Length: 443
Image (tube, rainbow, N blue to C red):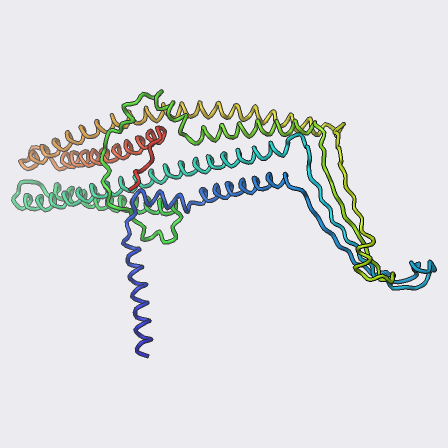
């Protein structure tokens, strides 16, 4: 009994420890991206599509193999029948068995089987590019959500610091009020500002929580209530890709981006479909073989002797020449030719979209960098203005309203620095992605 209790206690403590460890886990960006690529529903659906193309390839290989079928039939005939021995009609119950085996294979079918096999391999490549494109999109979405959490976390710290500063200012104002240096209204205004700061802290906490939930749901996590990310410090760094020209980035992107490769693969598939459809105009030649035998209980011979005596073989070739099939082949060819033209337009459009995307991402990154530099300068100026306002307030040269204005502007400037910082980081990530640089460096 004592040993049983110890085992239960040990298991309970193990479960508690693992649960506590899971709650303490802090997800890095790399872990988030890798987990999403394995568990995101859209990615898993694309993986299933890839599996289907593998099955289609197996079908294409099977077209080169002969079709072999075997049948067996056993029946009972009750009633008036001719006796196979005497030739006289009489009431009989006979058991009859028949066996048949057949094989057929294509000798020539306009090379459609070979073309379908080549197409199946191209379809696998296209599905791989589609899967990679889905992974790229998910990676960017995860990175954006991850950086949004970092911004909200830093913004919460700013709001909490401002609350602490205003609480200290309220305490200082109480001392000034007791000394008769400020009117009571100033203290009431400061206290009102403190309460407003508390509301801003609550709002910042909610925004942080919502951003965590958004990322957890993107990762398809069940236990998203305890989800949190690591305390990573992403600094604003000028990427090497910013020194490249937009045209150079575009040329590099054409060789690396999965959407261009996917469009090219779909174009190759459309061309293959046209070739396969045109081959239906050609005659086809197939070879066949058939074996059959039978046995009946009405005959006195042993069963296996009958099977051997009544066996037969049929074999030969069958030539099929298409003459007219209600425009079916012609219309199939025309539909595939239209699909080919559509694929060409899609390929051209993908190149246009990629070029526009690269130039837009480059402009956005450059603009985000300028916005960040301007925000830093504004924050420094607002911080100096706030210090000057505090000094003037201490000596009674400005009222509490002017001080609150200076504090609000300073806090907004800090928040703007954080916003522009993470906005710049994400837009550089997009630009780097076009240039073939991964979202994170593997450790």
